[in-house]
Length: 373
Length: 255
Image (tube, rainbow over all chains, first blue to last red; front, side, top):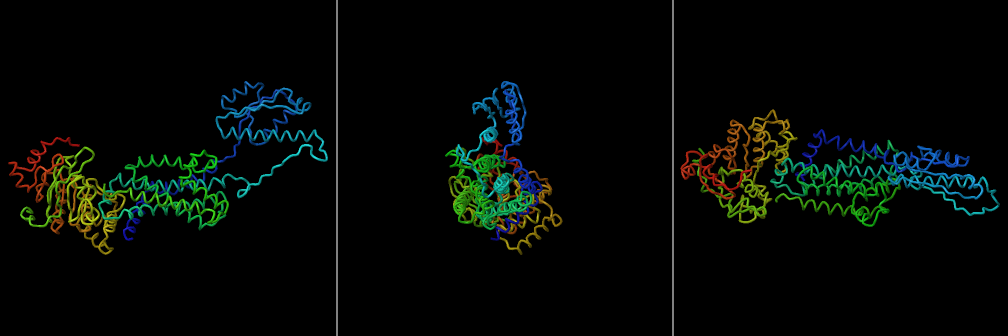
């Protein structure tokens, strides 16, 4: 125990003395947590739309004003021919084209039917998909409105209609920030804790001080603990600031579930994650190598964790990878406890898996750290 | 001076027999056999790349030999590396105290992990700072010290826990002659307390300060005796000449 005391004393002295590292650990994650959720918004707005109106009738104008008034679209072209509108797509000035055929109003009134043509620029998949969907909704609404104008409502509705009234549970206003902030905080804690820890040990290798440690009778387990504990504390600290300062004061997110449960899970998660960082450090000889390996995993951790895209919609092999990504579980648990107020029985399997990660990664790291080569 | 003291009847603290270390097809240390007696100042000489550091790392329990047998402080270098580590001090070629800790903090840290009590650490710190005349620098970061002082500090930290043997790998590389002389005074002081000194160097004047020296060429030991006897053997008037005579035959390129 005394050995660990001396190791911790040394580690904290070095961390607090490092004028470059300290802001990196403490300030940068907070800035990111303030900025990223504001930008990472799934709601697509400002979709540029070009309209080819071959009809110029009151109905076509009504349709156009319905579209532009929806707030999702920005009219960037009102052209006479499809060809011209097509050029706008080429120049990236339009994401969508809607072509209103000549005789739109006449056909709609006389024949009760008319076709519209929508072309979508699918370069940006999210924008294309959502833009097309929004436009369909707007046209459907327009359709219903015009029908109501003409068709006298009978005693019974001639066409039975199913009306859908969705209600969003746990996040009634579908505020994306509520959803993103806990996830982004999880990723930030992961990056700060795990990778700083990995770099710290590799730095000792680079400078050569690890040789001086290896020639002492210090136990491997003690040395690893001496590296793990400081970054565990830092991870806890960053998380606390993120949750109680940024998430609460800026985004108004108050965890619904038990704080104790959240911290309990975080505590175990950090042990698993730091084990991963230690493992990277035992396989790298230079900080550059460690950074490269860490970067590879950061990308996978971020994109395959369900932070941006749900794990359920991934192909089978990707789901498998997500299963072996500790960040997946942490993000899920964060959202469950913070937004849904989940209790212990809801997250017990997550916790069990993280415990397994912690045991395997740390054992592996201790075994792979060699004092004698 | 110390040549007059005969250590040959002392028990050996390092002994090795046919010790080898191979890295793939490269034989860094090739069947070396010798003994170092307790209390000796043993000079371990050789050109760059001759295998000195590799051999030293094996004695320190940092590297497992490929074949042969060796004991350090009575412990086997294959099995008991951690027990060896309790009984030795090591100062590597690369300065390896923590540059971002102060002088006193480095002493506390290394004293602490060698298991010294708080009282011992306090006493040792005062004694060490006094001996090195570093009383006013105790709160300075090691980074800011001149190289010579760093090396003296590094040596003092290596013998802080009163090891049986201290291994010094080119401790005076890049240090000015006055500081080198002071460094050797520290080595003698330590030697007087009974610590065995195992030292590598490229300075032939320093070789003269040793009780016995060995010359390593291409991973093998080509000569081993007192400086006086070696000069006689090679009919040379200085250790420089002995070194040239032996190192000339080296096939390995120096690095």
